[in-house]
Amino acid sequence: MGTGFRASMDWLHTWAGVVLGGLLFAIFWMGTLSVFDREIDRWMAPMTRLAPTGEVAAVEALRASYEAAAAAKATSWFAQLPTERAPVLQVTWREGTRQLVRLFDPATGAALPDPGTWAGTGFLYPFHYMLHVRLGYWIVGVAGMAMLLLCVSGVVIHRKIFADFFTFRAGKQPRRLVLDLHNVTGVLGLPFHFMITLSGVIIFFGVYFPGTIQFAYGDEVRAFAREAYGNYDRPRLGRPGALASLDAITTEASRLWDGETPRYLFVRQPGDAAAVVQVARHGEDRVAGRSDIAYFDATTGALLHQRIAPQPVLSAQRFIAGLHLIQFRHWTLRWVYFVLGLAGCALIATGYLFWLESRKKKDGRLGPRGVRLVEALTVGSVSGIVVATLAFFVANRLLPLGTVFLGEDRAALEMWAFYLVWLASFAHAALRPRRAWIEQCGAIAVLALAAVLLNWITTGDHPGRSLGQPHLWSVAGMDILLLGSAATAAWAAFALDRRRARATSLGLAR
Image 1 (tube, rainbow, N blue to C red):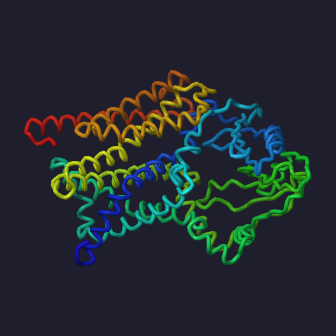
Image 2: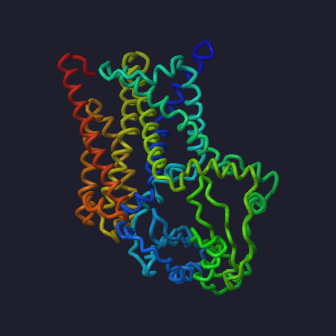
Image 3: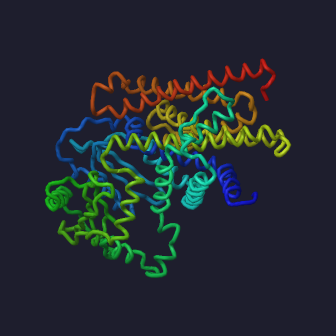
């Protein structure tokens, strides 16, 4: 570890980054994409590319889905009303272990085709915070604490942190160039990286510190929600009950909020005589959102309760969570989050690469096999997950709706494409260590370009057409970013290939 405080921090910074760098890159990469998760949804589900009509959503058309959820003994029924970023009616409920999603045209109430994909909000975003595994919350929590340590220790070990920000020697050797890029991205994004990591940990305080709630409330977890957030619930009666007019419920909620359209409808135990319809107010004009929620009797439509503002500590928690989730309407800030998220990815990747270049000069410490193993892990963790994400997009455009293969539906096949390609990227890096970076950058360029072309072929939407229609700007943005990624990756592959050719001619290639 070394002697002295700064030496100890250097050791901690190095090994926390090396051990958890691959995991942190995956978390930051998926979090960066999740900034535009709903825009990715529209790109991956063409049936949702609807033009807004300005009319009141046909909420009553959701009654059939509610009755289907009640007949299936679903524990909950959730209806999300259209917004600027997601202009469809979306209903979700669970039948056993299956989660069903149905989409409706908000203007007519007509059912839209099954999207057959989990897209951004269903796959990329959950991967960011729980990795799609049971222990994922805890694994991501440990990674988040490590990232906080990396931020603090990084400040400690850099004596000239502000000078490092203005130092970038592109013409120097790869090791020096990578270190300069690591320092610049670290200093540039330090406030954001610390804030986004700390807020991510705070969001799941109930998961990481369950004992605090259990100590005060025992098994009455809902009592905590009632006192802290002002929630309302009542025990089920165990006998069937009809559903009141959804239009009347949303109209009354809108009247309570000065004509503002509700954000969602949520019902626990649909079909029960004591079911309660929870209606939330839109809060896109505030960082923390709005805490206004009205509770209606599902059978009679009568107003039962209006939620009061949460307690001060919980209000602070909601504000911090709002900073992380960025669900408020602010497109400039959303792009700032996206760019700084990419800077975080570059920070982690360059830290990995600098350590790897340093180790290559000390083969005696790891041995040639050890260096190759770590390099394969680095390639798969950095370029490999990007290749896998693009394969996910390409699979979405290649697989027809309703595809089933080996018992797996289209959404599952897309996810299998992601995981199998990601796994293959590690194998490729191990088998072709000399050209792994070059070939995977080339794969990124090819897949990104293919995704744009396939979107054009299968939907008729291309950047030129989409930019001319405001409701398709999100699709155009996705295509343009993919084209930019293809150009950047192609340039990187060419530059790396030329550098390797020069090193080979000088007898320096490893």
